[in-house]
Image (cartoon, rainbow, N blue to C red; front, top):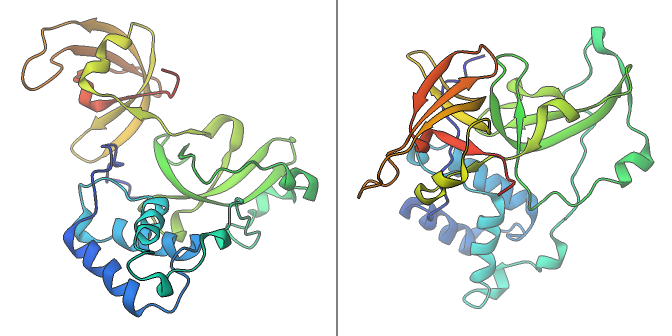
Length: 252
């Protein structure tokens, strides 16, 4: 599986001019319900996979939804009521079917009813193909395997249906790691679990790592200049990195 693109970690700063123009056009011409979750997801996905957004922050569907909603007063006849926006996590049993060697029973209805509203949370999942963590665009289906453990079929941000993957809920799904600001470096200490952006000639992906040592340095106009010695969990190799390559678990 070719996953050479890094995930986007910077904080969202805004739409590009072509994206605004497209949404303005949709505002006038589209006959769909502009505030529906499905429509906003479709628009956000088209932006995220476009060449014009390469290297820029990922757009969430909720941001597209907010933009259309803010235009209600300008063109209320084109905006559907936001009361119709679905809030529950959808499950698509047909997607990512179980393989022959991993037959499993479908999750009972009552378990599905316990799913909480995840629409405002962001998640990341670890691929079994390379052990790296990727942002989750959506959860497609869920099941229990023979051992009794739960699995979900995920679609990764920036990848198509051919890369959908079943992953273990307990071991390979978690809330999205948080990018660090320059002023956050003092919160890190030896032994902390971090997510590190590993840059190699043939790949650039995120792996779990632990901080081994921190060389504190004076910050300057460029921000944090501290050096962090980290040890990757998957192969125990060590590397000195800057803060910009680290994300932390959402516990601060």
